[in-house]
Image (cartoon, rainbow, N blue to C red; front, side, top):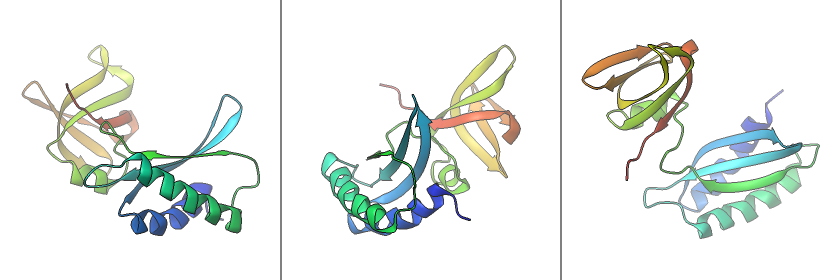
Length: 151
């Protein structure tokens, strides 16, 4: 049986494409006792509120028709954001050489957060250049990798 996120991804991808957007990610999470279905979009020129609204309306209709989720939930359609998390291999390849923040589950050398330049990705392991030194983090160590933007 397919996961909710996989079913919703399959439904949302063509709808996002019709709006000139790319489906970045889908989350189905429980927060504060309520379920949220979050659909994240990306677009070369940037995602705006009109993109989110159009995808939300069309996707909501499609979800009502297919009804893949039995319980009640809140649908949120939004931009992946400038500091989006990198999850898939294609994300890491696309943003190779970009500034990232990597967070670990356990401290390494007394810290759990590393900011640097994404230098490598190999089967889940990530290499980040921090202060002229390239550090390798194995998949099991990594809690989160996201793009980093400094203002």
